[in-house]
Structure formats: structure tokens, C-alpha cells
Image (cartoon, rainbow, N blue to C red):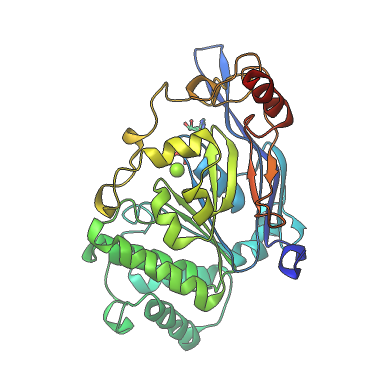
Length: 346
Ligand SMILES: Nc1ncnc2c1ncn2[C@@H]1O[C@H](COP(=O)(O)OP(=O)(O)OP(=O)(O)O)[C@@H](O)[C@H]1O
Ligand SMILES: [Mg+2]
């Protein structure tokens, strides 16, 4: 084991669970299992992509990782500290170290505030610097996101900017606190196709320059390749496969990952994976999670009497070189499933 593997992860979710109570009829409630037992960890400076269809629980996981949402089960650790149930007051030091960049740069910025006020606000909340010092930090952050010269943007309002520029402001606002962790939840999906690559490149550069750990949420498994060395695939509130992005894309192990990749039409970034292109079969509902393996009703490799009965535990896959850091939760790779395949093959 290398030192990197032994270090305390910056962020760790253990068995994280978010079950929402949704009212169906007047006296009937259903439980929506948006997050249903997720283990994931992120080392300092590491980027992890999180992919999966709409409704698979990506944003819920992201919100838990920022403790914007308290999980109904499991634990959240940041830099070794259990932050699962900390009060808002006690979360303040964490809030300074962990920031989010969200999908919609049009609603996430207050339209009555100038760019300077927007980027300065976190400094005021966390009582960092004063007067000139704050102004310098704001200009530094704008410069970092390449809004140059920063002075030209300070007194403008969000509506005077393009979508791409607004998202840069959103990134500057996150960056101004020099966080160690940034959740980027589909940061380019609502931006003009023409500026998407630039924003992703910017996020990439910032990550390397400041050694920020990223959780990068995306529908587009293909962009993960350029962005994150490691990828986790979510299905109905669970991580079903995780591993080095290149290997995961070149040789997906889970039939769901295989389906996701098959649904990616072409390398043209303008029209890559959209949710409507995803796998055939019933769109899954976290209010009615299937028995056994939750993917079994849509799975081309379904094994009767096994996949519909037993929930597959994640298995580590040895690449033959002493482990590749890949895991998959699928009966094609469990002992029970392998026995079944061997006996049906005879
Ligand atoms: N507050 C809530 N109450 C009830 N159900 C919720 C709530 N928030 C989310 N959900 C449900 O939880 C599931 C997971 O939602 P989530 O937003 O995490 O998915 P997602 O993977 O981010 O999807 P998308 O790709 O569309 O953003 C969905 O079925 C959603 O409807
Ligand atoms: Mg989402």
C-alpha cells in the first residue's frame, strides 16, 4: 500500500443514506431512497467524477458531502472529523474549507448584488480580511477565473454577463475562500456548448494549481475522461462501479456502465449523452427500488433466482498487477454469480 492510500481521506462517506418521506395521498407516505448506502472517499487534491442517469442520487450525494443535507443514515467525515450531525454553528470551519459550484449560474447568483459583492460575501461571512485586503482577494479570485482585468467586472451585475462568465463568477466565489474541496454539480450543463470546454479546462487548472479535491457530477461520462482520473457510477442511490476513469471507459464491468457508454453517441461534445439517450427499459424510481440487484429489471445479463433475490456486495477486481482499485457490485463478479455461470456453462 502506498502512502497516498494510507493517508486520511479528505472526504469520506460511509454507508450514507438519504431517505425522503414523500406524501403520496393524504394519509399515505412513500419513502424515496435517494441515497441508499454509499461509501465513497476522496483524497486531498483528487478529482472523482460521479456519473449516472437523472434521478440516480448524484445531487443528493453532493449535498450530503457539503452537509447542506444531513443524511438519514451513515456517516460523513471531513479530514477525519465526523461532521454527520454537526450544528450549523459547528459546521462553520468546514464551510470555509468546502465549497460548491452548481448547475445553474442564472439563479445561483443574487441579481441585486454586484460581482464584487457576490465574490466578497463569503469573506464577510467568514470574517476574513477587511477593506483593501478583501478587495485584493476578490480581484485575485476574479483573476484566477480569468475575468481580466478584474476591475472591469467589479461593479457589474450578473445580468450583464454571459452564462459562461456567470459561472466563472460562481467559481470565483467558491475559490475566494481557498477551499480544499469543491463539489461541481453539472457545472457546464446549462452553459453554451461553445464555452463548456473552457470552463472545464479552467476547473482543471484550478484543481492542479491549488490542489483542490473535486467531486465532479456529470451526465456525460465522456467528459469525465478529461477531468477526473477516477470515476464512480451511480444507479438508484448506490455506487455500482468505481475505478480509474480510463479503464472504466475502456472496459466497463457493470452492465449498467456498459449501457451508459453504449448510449454515448459520438465524440462530438455538443450532443453527447443526454438522459433521453440512456438505456432502454423502465426509468427507475427510488420510491420503488427493485429486490435483489436494483438494476436487474433492465439488465441484459440477468440471472433468474439470483439477481432478483440477492443484493450484490461490491467486489474488488484484481487487474492481475496486484489490484487496480476497481470495484463493482454485480453478480457477474460475485462468488454466487460465478458459480452460477460455471455450472450453466457445463
Ligand atoms: N426533497 C426531496 N424530497 C423527495 N424526493 C427527493 C427530494 N430531493 C430529491 N428527491 C428524489 O431523489 C432522487 C435523486 O435525486 P437527485 O437530484 O439526487 O438525482 P440526480 O442524480 O442529481 O439527478 P439529475 O441528473 O436529474 O440532476 C430523485 O428521484 C428525486 O426525485
Ligand atoms: Mg442532479
